[in-house]
Image 1 (spheres, rainbow, N blue to C red):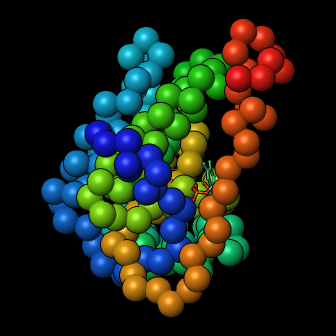
Image 2: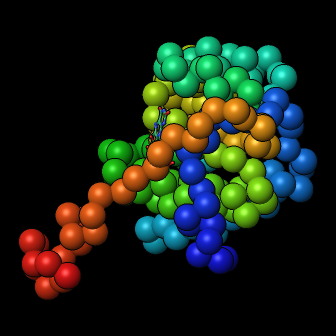
Length: 175
Ligand SMILES: Cc1cc2nc3c(=O)[nH]c(=O)nc-3n(C[C@H](O)[C@H](O)[C@H](O)COP(=O)(O)O)c2cc1C
């Protein structure tokens, strides 16, 4: 995978209300499945909800405020949840699912699709809408879709300076 996709991926708000092909969905999910996970536990359950379905509208209504405005045009929403957790929740499970989600975003970017992860939803409403069992936790939602032509000025994307986040040898040592 070219490193270009790392830099091209962005959280987009310009989606065309058009479904993805089955082949695209398959490629995105396959990429998600090849993420690393602790002890190869693969603790993800990914549920895809396509634009125009009753469940799609239910998921949109369950999103926190501002997200609904642009997410409603997406071709596909992927709900990343955990497999059924019988014991105490180990936060590393969410880490594994995050890697899986990143793979999904990079693959979608390679397929010239737009993505946007979402961290705000009503857990009960989403669970009810798509029959997620109580013993599973939702990690995040991923909006995926074809790019719409947009007259909006793209939001400036920034990152902090590397030295604020990376040290060699010990905490605080400049690189
Ligand atoms: C776990 C997670 C939750 C997020 N939740 C939201 C959200 O609810 N609404 C939103 O507009 N963006 C959300 N984002 C997108 C971030 O705001 C975005 O990734 C960040 O501003 C960096 O921009 P970029 O993705 O274009 O690089 C979320 C991102 C992650 C990883």
